[in-house]
Image (cartoon, rainbow over all chains, first blue to last red; front, side, top):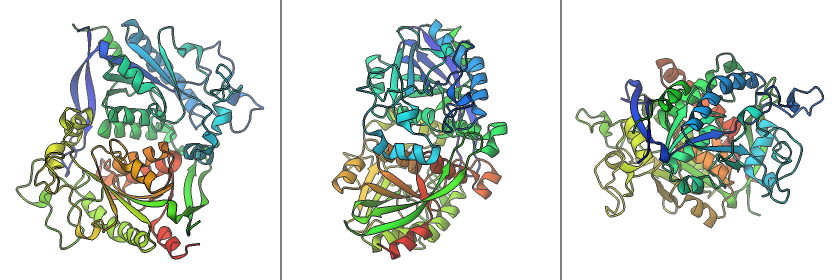
Length: 267
Length: 268
C-alpha cells in the first residue's frame, strides 16, 4: 500500500424533504496508487505568452470561431482559473507522481456529421465538429485533418511525457473512448477532476465516471460553465452547476485544499 | 413509411459568443413507427384519489421516507404536472399507437451499497436503496424484496398491457439495463421523453440517449428538479427552469405537452 492523500470533501445534503440540511464535509483518504488526476478539455490558445494568437481573436476570422466555451467573456475567466487554480493543482499532482490523464475534444472519422450529437452542436452552438475540431497532428485516415486551432492546448498546459492523452468526440470522455480501459489498466478508483465545462464535458464525464463506479472529487474552483448572459457577471450558471454536482453526482474540494493535501501525504 | 408526427421543436442558440441568439424553433417530423414515448420515474402514490396514502405522509413512516423527489412540496407540483401535462400527453401517445416505455428505479441485488452511487445516495440524499427501493412484486433472488412503497406507481399512471417496463438502478436508464436493446429491437430512432427528475434520472437518461444517437424531444412541462434549494427556488421552480434551459442548449430540443397532443391529432 502506497502513500495516501487525505482531503476534507464537501457535498450538499438534499434532505430532509421539508428543509435541506445543505453543505457538509467528509474526510476521504485516497491511495495515490489508485488515484488519477483527470484534466478535461483545457484546450484554447492564449494562456502562455508564446502561444499563437487564437483564431477567434483575429479580426478576419470565420464568424463561427469562438473561445473554448460558448461565451466571449469565458476566455478571460478561463485564464484566471487556469493560472490561479487548475495549473497549480496539476503541478502539485505531478510533483507527487499522481497519474495524469488528459481528455480532449476531437473529430474522428466516424460519420460525425450524421450523428444526433453533431446536429445538436450545429443547431445549438453553431459548431461544425468536422471543421472546428479538425487537427494537423493526427493521422487523416483516423481523424479529420485541418488547421483549426480550436482544440489546441496552450504551452502552459501541454501534457508532459508519461502522461496520458485521450481524444474524445462527445462531451463525455467515456463514450467511444479507451478511458475506462485505461483507468482499469492503471488500477484507478479515485478521480480528482479539473477542467471545462461544468455543464457539458466535465459534467457528463463526472456522471459517467459515477456510473463506472469511480469515486469523483471535483476541484470546484477549476471549472466554468456556459453561463447564460444574465448569469455571466457573477458566474451564476457555473455556481449552479457546481452545486448540482455536489448535490447529485460527486464531492468537491478546492485547488488550494488539494495542493495542501499533496504536501501532507500520509502513509 | 408510416404516419408522421410533425412538431415544432424549441432549442436555445448559444452563439455567437458575444451575444447569444437565444430561442429558435425547428420543425421535426417523427416517423411514428420509429418513435417511442419514454416515461421516466413517474412513481409515487397520491396522484390518484384511490391510491393508498404514501408512507412518507404517515406519522410513523420509514426513516428517510420522502416523496419521489427530495423536497416535500415537490409532490404537489408532480401531481399538477402529471394531471395537467404528463398524463394527457401519455394518453395521446397511446391513442396513436406510439410505443410506450416506462423506466423505474429499483434495487437489483448487485452489491449496490458497495457502489459509489449507493454511497452517494446515502450521503447526499439519505436514501438507502436496498430498503427504500425494495419492492414486493419482484423475485427476491434478483431484487431486494421489501414493503417500501417509494417506487409504486399511482393507479392513473400504471403501464398498460403491451407497454414496456424497464427497471434501472442509477439515475440513467441506459446504465446496466436493456433499454438500448429494447429500442433497437423496436427500431426506434426518436424518443419523446417525460418524467422526473430533470436534474437526475430524466436528465441523465436524455444525455445518454444522445450518446446512443437517439433524437430526443423533451416535453418540457412534464418535468421537475430536485435541486430547488431555497424557498424562492421552490416557489418559482427556478432550477427546474434552469435545467430545462440547459437541456435545450446543450442536449436536446423540446416541445410542450399541448403541442405534442395537438400533433397527435394531425398525423401526416
